[in-house]
Image (cartoon, rainbow, N blue to C red; front, top):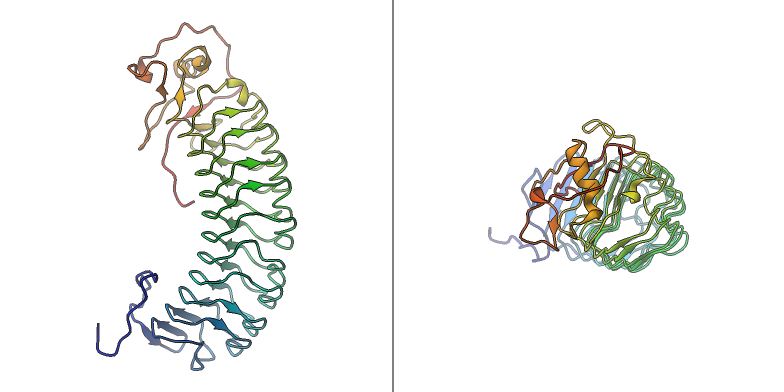
Length: 371
């Protein structure tokens, strides 16, 4: 460290930007990292496009702090100590497309705080201390596409929490402490395609919890504490392609739980406590297939204590008919808990003929990414 240079606090991630400097100013870029700033400085160039202020002990964003930055498109205020955001703090940022307030101490955002940010497409409030979805957060955000509220302390989703977010396509709520998903929790998110709820404490999902999410393609519910999947939970998801339920404690899935999932191509159930998985669970899934595995459903099932008896006959028959195969990249074949000394490939059952399946089923095991 050079003489006079300040060190970053321990909670501030190492600098990974394309300009590896703690202080940098050019005609269109302004970077101030770990400089001991206690307020937003006044020397930000009026024509700056990118403003990045990180790792400073700034606790309050004041009204009109950025009012002269009408051309700014990216404002990153990460890993500071921001607690208070005054209404009007973002006045004047009419061209702003990306705003990150990640890694601060924000517990609430007052209604109207973000009004006027009509060009904003990405908002990150990751790693703060919010306990609920802020009321009125959507006011003025007519172009918002991506909202990140992961790693907060959100415990519930209140009625109407997402009213006004009709343009949102990605919502990240992972790693909070949400315990249940009530009916109609996501009303208003008619354009949503990606919903990440992994790493919460969800034990209950009410029927109709996801109703209205007609554009949703990816739903991630893994790493929660679910023990069963009731019928009707996934009603109203005609576009859903990927459903992640792995790493829960699911031991029972009711008939009709997957009814209506006509676009489903991947169902992740690995690392649960399923003893049996009746083929009738999928009898109502009119699968349309995908480009890599035409007319197939990828069922990821390893890490469950399956009983290798007549209940798995449909899987073995599928293997014999070549419409069911096991792929594994980091995950193993299903384990036979009642015959632990027998490998799945050695299981031979005198299964009755069940006839042809209503569609080809492709069973595999793959690691997760991105979510």
